[in-house]
Image 1 (tube, rainbow, N blue to C red):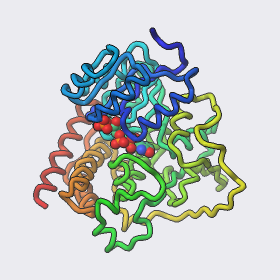
Image 2 (spheres, protein in one colour):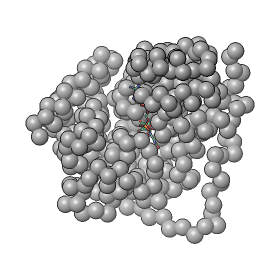
Image 3 (tube, rainbow, N blue to C red):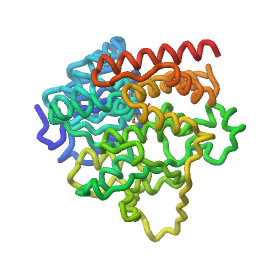
Length: 388
Ligand SMILES: NC(=O)c1ccc[n+]([C@@H]2O[C@H](COP(=O)([O-])OP(=O)(O)OC[C@H]3O[C@@H](n4cnc5c(N)ncnc54)[C@H](OP(=O)(O)O)[C@@H]3O)[C@@H](O)[C@H]2O)c1
């Protein structure tokens, strides 16, 4: 029987870092939130436990073997799918009205787009889908009446700060970056950084891809592009400030030179709850911010020489069209190769830069164009890596 809660959720990427945090938020608000569909990749044991706990009507795994295993292991009989069609079946399940996009990488593109076209609220953590298909997402929202609510903490902060603001009064927005594990490292040491060093993030516990992106500052670059899509801002209106304590998540700067800041604990359950329950604001999954504690906050400018990926993201946003999709695809291939020990840390930025230089951007106004750019950049990145 269909649940009567306000938000009936298809959670794509349920077994990941954002996925498991989302299920904690759902469990804390049974009157307002329920699970209609769960989609995972390869982690069948965790998917099984999640299904037994939340009893979705629809489930998907990335491959047929995992889907078959789940079918035989479950104590009840939901619809079970696999692969990209399975993601769509979950995202568009007729009992749902909300999608949490928590997949990693461009694999989330079609399901996010389809959900917006179907008029769903999409709470989007999967920034890559916005980076790759920003124009498509805006068109899908317009055509289908869907709604995008950011889950990335910086963008959730901007969403709060920009409520009921006249865009004419806004000079710029600033998103903060922790600076990652290599913030204070000299260039020579960064160039030789190991996988373990890069995975050792100082403030956030996240999946491996975004953790490496945080070490290169590519994550912040992807977030700059994400902000341009979500809030319709020009590249010159989006700035980055390094703030190692990760307590201020974003700032809005007004024409008169003043700023407003958003502050909260660095726990992803806060922006997840915000996106799911918006416009309601209810007691949080963590205690209110403690202002009796003595704290020191610091702010500094990012160093584009030691962290060139951030500059590449600005260049791709300026170039427009498929350039962000090209950069994202090269980066996904390079990060996977680094995690597998096939290239060094500094090679990630070299691969990204090479692919951007090799392939001229084209118009990004169709799914086919964006997917073709994604494939082309992946092929180029793989051949660059093969020659290393
Ligand atoms: N983690 C954070 O704190 C954080 C903060 C802000 C934004 N984000 C963004 O949120 C997204 C998710 O990040 P994460 O850290 O949660 O990643 P993660 O821990 O690696 O989780 C990724 C999830 O996607 C699933 N998945 C991957 N490829 C799939 C495919 N082809 N088909 C179906 N499922 C697939 C994985 O399944 P299996 O594990 O079962 O294989 C897993 O459930 C990323 O875009 C990231 O940039 C994350």
